[in-house]
Image (cartoon, rainbow, N blue to C red; front, side, top):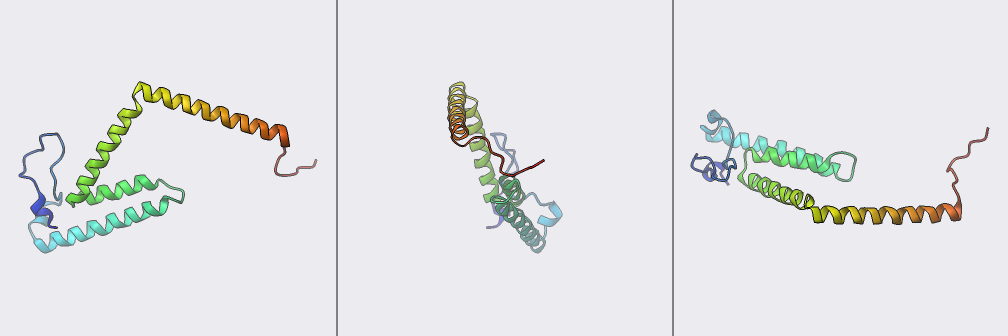
Length: 140
């Protein structure tokens, strides 16, 4: 899909969001072949960053943060990525608002306390039954 056909009219969005479409410099957008090369380059760089993020999901590293960084790279050029990022930002904001709700916070604190008490009881039962033995032997 051509990013040039998806741009809005140049007026800022009424809801405070940035306009959709390519953010390439004007001299790049002026030539079709240069703009297409620019889009391919942005796609490859974004794909490499998203791929690194996917690799980091099971391995140590900020996987989701890197994936969203790759999406942000794609969003500089592609409308579909801009729409995905807008949806993600909206959902994260809604989740943050729900998490700050006093009823939800109270429920989360109660559930966390109950979970910690259960873990404490299980650790106590284990120590009572097996004792505290270090996994290594140090003889002096």
